[in-house]
Image 1 (cartoon, rainbow, N blue to C red):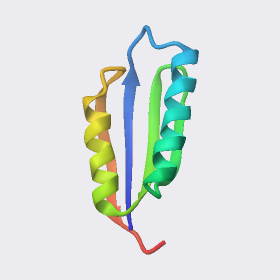
Image 2: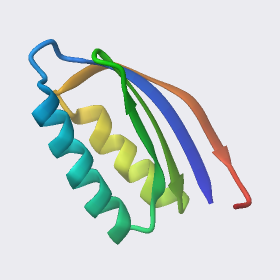
Image 3: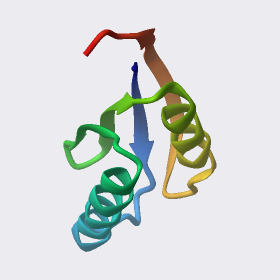
Length: 83
């Protein structure tokens, strides 16, 4: 198992409705890939923790890095976990 935690800054035009859609899609996609975690948003910044099999977590993070709805992505944690 692997845990990754990152922060980023939302683009200014990102609406609450769009954030809700991000969350809905994330829940569905993560369920299919046996990933867990959380997504926090304070109106301008995101913080997300992702846990699961290392290849799945890293593949998701690569997609996150390419997402143009946010910028300034900074990985805070990337570590092997036991549960």
